[in-house]
Length: 77
Image 1: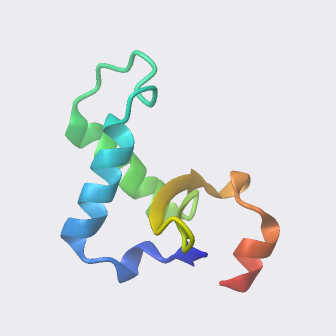
Image 2: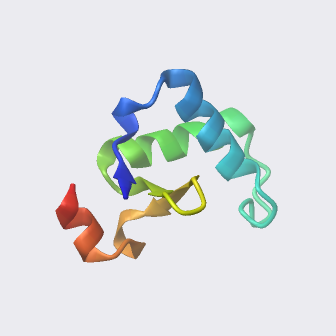
Image 3: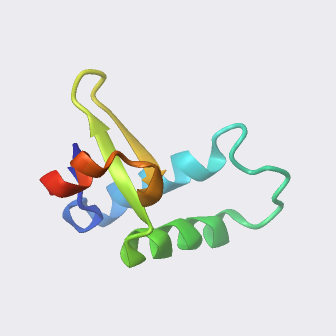
């Protein structure tokens, strides 16, 4: 299930993005400041290049590139 980013409270969205950009393995040696990485992801969400995926079974949210999401999920929205 996809969650439109604009439906999340601002603080919740920021925490979700911060969790994503600070996860082990996501920085790939990138020494860019946290705020800059957060803004990059926020812009990707706003442009529709990234989406928020919610798994009801695990009750977990995940950020993903739109191109990596199954087409049928995109058509449900």
